[in-house]
Length: 168
Image (cartoon, rainbow, N blue to C red; front, side):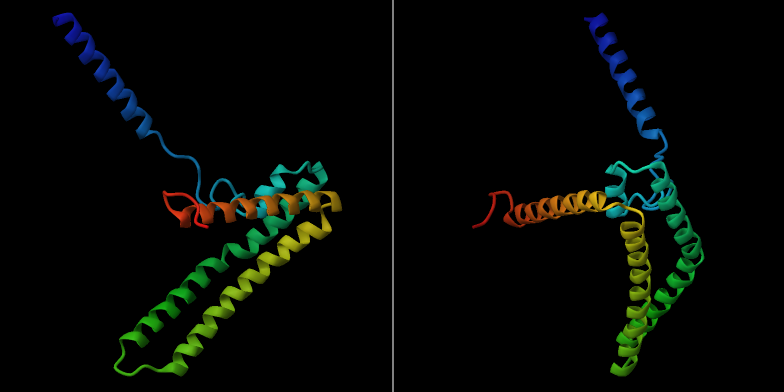
């Protein structure tokens, strides 16, 4: 009985220490654009599945690095601008009188910022798709996108249906 208890306690201690050591390991996954670079973009993930030539990989890497350099210092300024807009909108909401014209002006500034960033992303994607990839590779990428969209639709429908299954 004493030996069984000792073995049990020893195993419990060892398992506890192993669990603590596993939890204490640093997570090196990086952020959305951390060490992984631009792999968080759905198009880039799709590109990684293609059979690209070394020249194509170098060209894509060059385009993404150029975009990264242009966006390196802009995000902080854009974050400050968006924070300023958010603070001004909050002040408008808490003011005694609501100024609709000021709100429209703030929302127009916010829209301009988001539109500019989206246009830059689309230009990069277009450049990669139509200046670097072959037509066959574009077709494969389009098929991947269609499969992902179909999967997303099915997943969303299943989630809306709840635990009982799909709704009709």
